[in-house]
Image (cartoon, each protein chain N blue to C red):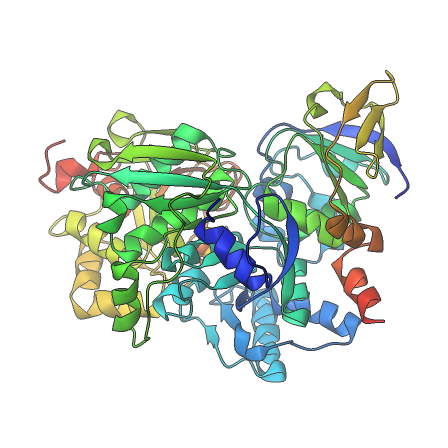
Length: 162
Length: 421
Ligand code: SF4
């Protein structure tokens, strides 16, 4: 998988999917929700995020409701990867299935907002370009990497079918 | 090395003799549940994109609970799509406005010991109460299951949660699980299965046990499970299902940890806004409430309504407080109607809402406005969960919610039901 590079937005521990996409927006499609992303925790975020950006979180990122739009709206807003100390398991699965790279990196706390990072999924590494620091990440098991590489579960199953 | 009950269920579903924690494998799913919010409206377009239908309609349960009754045209369209999906793919087990999915899956005895069950909702873990492995997932995951009958899993480690002793009067399973979450933190069980056992669990009803499994997601767990026993079998048989005790963990299985609690030391607790792991004794909180909400898969079963009635009997809701009750299922409502529980609630001043998710996810009837302070039997209190970002939610048992409705402030309910703390 080609490494992903982008600018960092930093969030704390236990970021809840209710904060990422408040329930009242669930009636809409992900592309429409993108303009409200993170409203429950950082209302100005949706106006600042740019395509290619990367989110860095703490422990238990994406905890709470199983809502897929939390991942798909982040994607629609242009987020291309999420690095976190740990993920809530449903959110992690939702990322894989949507083709949005989730990277478990115990040292994610060392990354600062605004820095540029390079995420090497296959190699299990996150490099902070500003400082040159190389942080260890958990490589994805092959079974799961295949889904991500295909671009998500729909694409993966489509490929299998052919 | 022996296997835990969860390992055994995964091994069987994966066609294997045994599995080890952390390995990833594909498994066959015995039963899947999807609901109106994350179900047909999101899954159908993906099925169309792939050019496939529902793999096994008889292994799928479809429930409309989040958007009933429709509050606006958008919600009505979501419900229409849900109905059309049931017709198009011949889903016989489709229930609209009959109850909240997790309550129905247990109450209708769709779940059986040893099953591998997945649901398109994070509180799917509730189902573990019947001794099955109940895994919550998102819509795209469920699309995969609906299309192929299979999914991938990472085999979890198990934490044994051993609860002995007698649960004191006025204290509930809700107080127990909130106490555990308060102790361990909201990521304290991340990726793990919590397996409940001990003398307090053996003595507990399926309804109360289901509050423990329901809130396992609130501690980050993959799921919770109560390995089936005589109580499970009796519950299923009462519902006309032939049942027997299913798989259990081997004596020499490898638990990652054992958490022990003495139930006799428990007391009524609340989780303070805006974290469900900020748990303190109800008697120590000094806060006025404007809303008391009894609802959700977590806290509006018949047993919860009966607890509330015990507190409310012959009393009136305090001025300035709105008590709302949204029964978790039609069966819960019917039972509470039949024995006068509903009359007690209404006489005390309760506003009875529709059966469904209601205000719990901030979608249906009864959402909170700015400045409102609510005490609720639901499971989550993240900022804005039940409505306005400027509202506050305390989580508690039905006893404590009813007590606060009477006094207008957070109260140890034992004061009102003649139990000395
Ligand atoms: S009642 Fe609340 S917690 Fe239960 S399924 Fe509905 S939204 Fe989820």
